[in-house]
Length: 116
Image 1 (cartoon, rainbow, N blue to C red):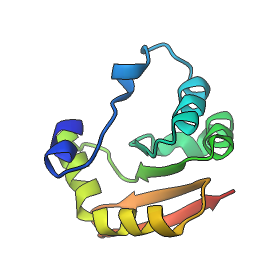
Image 2 (cartoon, rainbow, N blue to C red):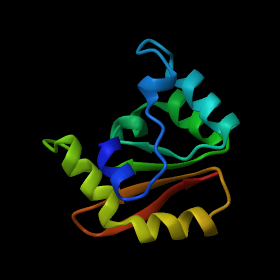
Image 3 (cartoon, rainbow, N blue to C red):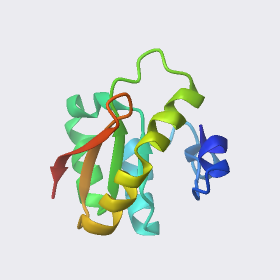
C-alpha cells in the first residue's frame, strides 16, 4: 500500500520502518502525534478499542480509517484512499485536530467520525 501512495505523490511513513511489531498502539500513536504525522489505518475495529481511540484523540492527529476493508489487498486499500484523496486533503486543511475520519472508498466519500 505505501508504494502505491508514494507513486501518487503522497509522503508516506510506514509503521514498520519506525516502530517494532510489538510497540503498543498507544505508544506509536503518541509518537505520530509528536511528529505531526497524519495516520492512515485499516483497523476499523478501533471503535471497539477505547484505549486506542482515546490515544488517537489525545495525540492531536488527524486519522483516516479505511472502512469495509475485508478481503482487500494492499493495492486495493491504497486505491480506496486514492479514490478520496481530494476529500482527505480538504479535511487535512479544514479540520482542526484531533479528528478521526472513516474512509469509504467504494462510495467515494469520507465522513467525520469523532472530533476532539
